[in-house]
Image 1 (cartoon, helix red, strand yellow):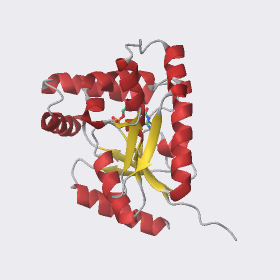
Image 2 (cartoon, protein in one colour):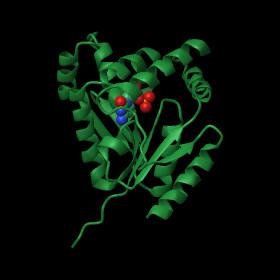
Image 3 (cartoon, helix red, strand yellow):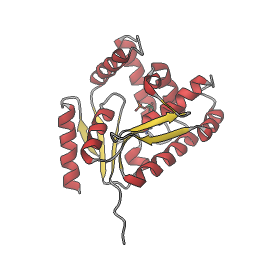
Image 4 (tube, helix red, strand yellow):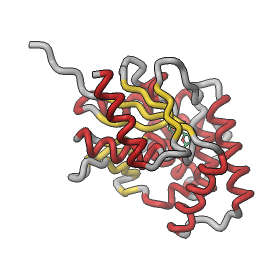
Length: 227
Ligand code: DC
């Protein structure tokens, strides 16, 4: 008997483009888990900061990645908790300092190899909406369902600012945050290993001018047509 392939939806794009919100809603609609891969890299970033390791020390960071106590646990609502040392990450992993460390350490091949292994073994079991930077290019290049979300920098900065204000995790000004997001975009897109790139196998969705529901409906109808 041939086994039905699990449904894997790749959602890639820059920071603050609305990937997580859209991916969570899509996963609810499709009744598959939602995996936020940025949270996995952030878990390592958090651990690097907690241990006061130098993010530039590639060898130590890669060794730490191999030993990291990272667990992906299904929640009853379809979400997936990323647990570090048995504890949920929560908002502490979204602090600007951790974002910076995470962007640096996610450039290392030894780090990416381990995260990709976790992501594949998780999603290949039940299927998933998987959100990140390299999901359609590296992690699941064979899935036909790839979406690249984009929006102007100003829109993304405004969204991030709202998130950070709501959680009380940052007192960065809009200008500082814009600089930080632009630097991160640049690093994520120009790194040698699995950079954020879009190619013709993706459907590009502009989230700047659409509501979350409109984006979700647009993607669902594409999935329907591609199925
Ligand atoms: O999506 P996010 O902002 O939470 O991601 C945090 C960092 O992790 C970001 O700098 C890019 C990196 N990342 C990555 O390199 N590959 C992924 N699949 C997901 C995130």
